[in-house]
Image (cartoon, rainbow, N blue to C red; front, side):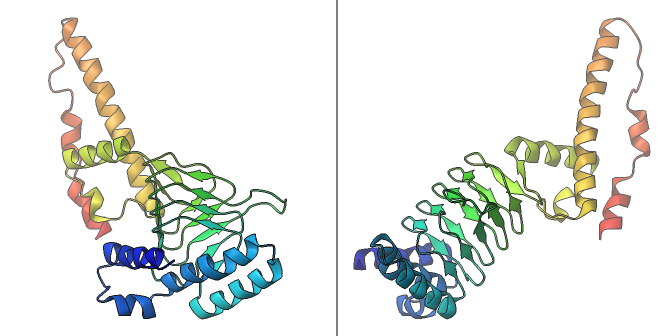
Length: 251
């Protein structure tokens, strides 16, 4: 019991640079309080079949910490709930070892049917503030969910999901957009890549389209040159593009 408590305290120091002392963590971190209450009181009562008493104790934990954890939820080791206010963890939720949840996170259901209806988080998952993970879906090992994302389908291991509804952003997508933005002189990362702003999404689509068009143009020019056609400066039109004007519009 106390070894688990020491482990949970150590996790706070690993993931929160604001932590200054063990006494501060033990007395001032509601995420730790909610997890300890769940592990030592609510969940054991639930597993013992004392369902009403388990719900009643979980209700007191919610009142004291602002974090609602259903006593039937399964929570692994070294889980960290940072700040925690507004976190909701449903009955059939499963949280693997080494996961991190920020405030306002919901692990919710999308059905009134009995059975598994809440998410499963594998090991090392990070859920950003305000994110909603809904339904009996699986978030793979090491996946990251952006702030305020709404996730309604599985997320592969190591992937990042952002937006409403959430879309998977692969490493290849990020690298391609960054390379294209750098090539045209546009500071794409002056704004957050996971924002839901329609302008941001439109610019990302334009970067994807520009990269694909450049690739097709390069293949076409290469083929024409192999066929003996003098192409001249096939990309002269691009000189009329002023990326700095776009940057000024977003300042």
